[in-house]
Image (cartoon, rainbow, N blue to C red):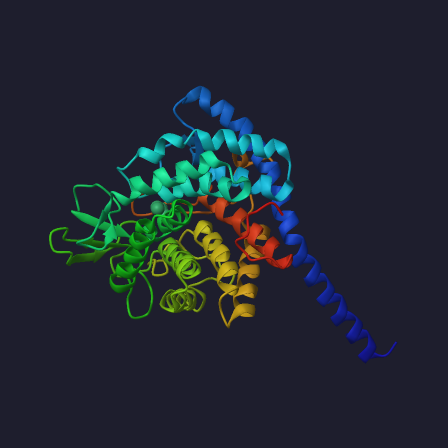
Length: 402
Ligand code: GLY
C-alpha cells in the first residue's frame, strides 16, 4: 500500500470514529445519567431521614446531599430530569417517579412571592405535560401563570424578580427563563394576557439589560412608581460591569425561546448576538466550559460553571433550527456536550448521584463553588434530548413520546 492510500484510509477511519463518538454521545450521556439518578434516588431517601421538608436535590454540601423544599428555585429540576429519563428510555419506572416528584411541587402554583415559577413549575409540570398531556398538569401550569402574572407591573413593563428590601423592583436576567411558562399557559388557556406579559418583559429586558457588546447585566433595579431604571448591577457576578457566566446563558436560552414563541426577528438577532459574545469570548476556555464570570479577576485560576455550559449547549441546539449559522451552532453545542461528558462527568457511583461536577452557584456569596448542581444536570439532559431529536430529524425541543 502506498503512502497516499494509507493516508486516505487513516482519514476515513478518523472521520468514522468522530461520527460514531458524536452518535454515541446521547446514549453514553443518558446511560450515565440513568445510573447516577438511580443512586440519587437511594441518597434522597437517606437525606429525607435527616430533613423531611426537602423534596428535591440541589447540590452537595460538605459531601452531604442537600435537599430543598418546594419553594426553592431549584425544586423543579430533579422532577424534570426524571421526565427526560422517561422520555428517552420509555421505562415506566421513570414515569412513576416523575409523576410523584412533580406532584410534590404543586403547592408552588400559588406561591406569588417569587419570580421562579418557570424554573419550578415549567421544568416539572411543563415537561410532564409536553410528554403525557396530563390534564391536571395543564391546570397547574395555568394556575401558576396566573400567580406569576401578579408580579407584573404595567408601569415597569416587567415581572418583578425578588421581594428583597435592597431593591424596590429588581429584575434579573434569569427571569427570562420564566417566560416559557407564560407562553405555554397562553396557548393552553386561550388567555393572551400571559403572552402579552411575556412579550413586554422580554422587550423591557432587551432595552435595559444589555451592553453594546451584547453581554447582560445581572440585575436592573427599577423605580416602580415611574418605571425608570435606577441602577444596573450584579448580584452573583464578579462586578456590576462584568458578565456573570450563567446570566449570559439565561439570556441566550431566553431569547432563543422567545423567538420560537413569537417569531420576532429582534429576539433571534439578540440570541445570535449573545451567542457570539459567549462563543467568541477571549476568556472562554478551549473546552468551552466558562469560568463563573467572563471577567473573573484571576482567570485561569477561577472556578468553572458547568451549568452555564449545559444551558448554552441546550440553547444552541434549539437556535440551530432557526439560524443561517445552523452548522456552526450544532458543532459548538456538540463540542460543549463532548467536553461535559468526557471531562466534567462524576465517576459512576460517586457524588451522591449527581451527573456533572464543577458548577458554581454564587461565588460572591461564597456559596456552592465548584460543586454539582441540579440545574447543570437538568440542562445537560435537556441538551442530550435535543441532540437526540435533531439526529432523528425532529425539532430540537420535541418532547412528545419519541
Ligand atoms: N436563578 C439563579 C441562578 O441562576 O443562580
